[in-house]
Image: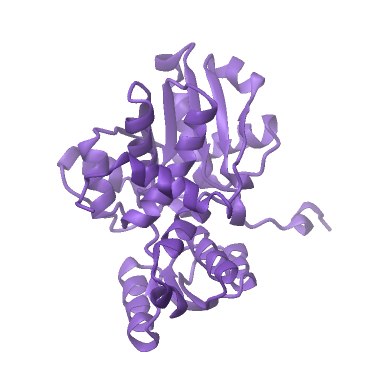
Length: 318
């Protein structure tokens, strides 16, 4: 498969390949939020997906595209949470071992979930350099197969199935998705360009981790020297492959502040009663900001996941 050249059949084959293993998540409306923002908004609820996030799609597709020998050696990856859960889940479902390298500051609930799916967790410093070097040692010492969180074709093709389901169910004017490494957004852009070229796609990113936004301006992949955002799933730098796809398809990226993310999170919890994680609230926050430009239009927002630490005891005082 040549870089950035995608056959439409590859997209449909990926959707067919993973269909028996994942949920077809609902596309749900909110009359209250549609009225507040004056857009016809529907939410693709990936918080109801296997492992509680869209990452199940890419991880399973990547695992299924491996040869038997590659898969049987075991699967490994690095992740702050959702992708690690997805690889551990896919490995367990396919009956092979898995190892997930996780930064020391990854949310506790996500570490526990990875272990719960049967993976071995190896902790590392919270830098991309440490994640990659620790993972490389796993590959070299154990011969396991690396499933990239976002910057490889099999993962991107798996993530593309999310937008495919949206477009099979509805005819939106705009699809919005969060961006960290770019697997979900590039998959969304590819599928939309094939199935519904008239539908716009926009990526959403925190101001405190705005490498994708800066990359689109500079014309090459930028990196974050440090990140400051509650959206832990979006702290990853954009990939080289995902950047080139988004650049070639001319996908704009919008940014939102931490206050805007928190306000969007509050509104979603208040009006929909869905438990979504901060990363999933980022495109919601951007929609609120851009709503006047899309007044009266049909907008689909991909809610990327619902995994976050919750401690009911904190509700009790004294």
